[in-house]
Image (cartoon, rainbow, N blue to C red; front, side, top):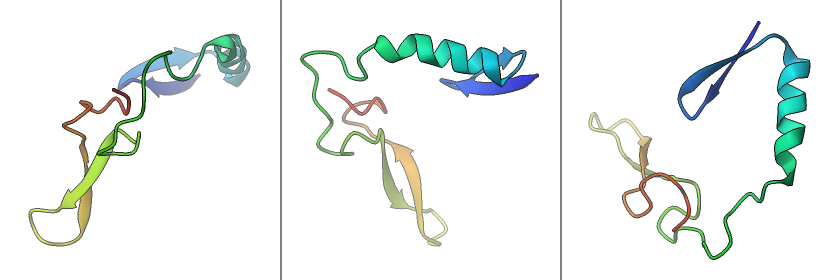
Length: 72
């Protein structure tokens, strides 16, 4: 059994072949909706890096401009 996290929800597949067939069916969908553009703040990543509270580097946090979607 294969478990894939899809939008933070675990999805169970019997095997990888089932997952591949579902992904190939979705290839016809556009990746970005018509009329939308990438967020300028996060460059379409959906997150930005902010300093960690303990001062030991940067941590990814959701972008507040696009609410983590990457498009506006």
